[in-house]
Length: 403
Image (tube, rainbow, N blue to C red):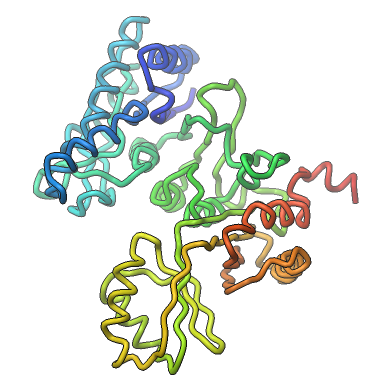
């Protein structure tokens, strides 16, 4: 017998038929003797509809009321699943975030979970009553509804798993697990059996949509064993685990990418410290930085207009001659625990891209990740070339035989 938290995303509960299918899957786990809690997203597309309604009413919605509105989709799915479970002979009880409660910070739209009260949930699970919990939402210190950002149901599930001391948190989605890179771009991308918390954090931070970054951090901090798997295929997914559980550490585990940034290039006598201080004061994050004859760095596309406007207004003070922005860029990263002990991985990456005549605007390296900034038009060819260069299409057994 195990204690499990099962999370189902929007495509898994997109209509009544799929909700009934989820109910049967949950009931099967219950019949195997496991203690079960379930976390749900809203039906696919429902949150977008609620966002549109709020913005139709108010161009810049009141943050408190906006969170209240867009959290409503999960209320529907938890009620429907509780009914579906009752119809097939399982006892279930639906919960909204404030009813547990899931206590969060007061940052509307992107709140952080501070605490989940687990005792009530544990008591129900031990009685074979299934708590069906609304994801994506919590309650602030003053009692207001808060939301956790897009993908926040992942974070809810992991935080609930930590609170009830679950043996495992299974996150059911429309993908089969975590792949070596995007299988829509690289045909022979391979599903990983295991990935460490640290590697998954890097994947998520670079734009991988498999898990919300906050959920990975909560899992890492609380050592929650997480499996990402498909709602539509009866097969194991990818386990996110502590590094100690990974026996075969490769130099590179996979490739991540992001097209959500803009390259800013500043020419002339550049006072980079003053530039970065100005952007930091405006809460505009700067990522990749390179300085040669000009200063090059990236900011999120959503912050581009604000960043350029601020810099131009301070141009005479900062002393630069010109500023240019390029939205047609992409960040590509190699990620792997083995990068720590294989410094040649960065060299292999740069050599591979150079051989493909792909210009590199900037490079950064951290503990288990190397990232390059390239033109977006080269993204797909870069991913394919790097996937081959690091033999990511081969599992450890195949790779050793081939060697």
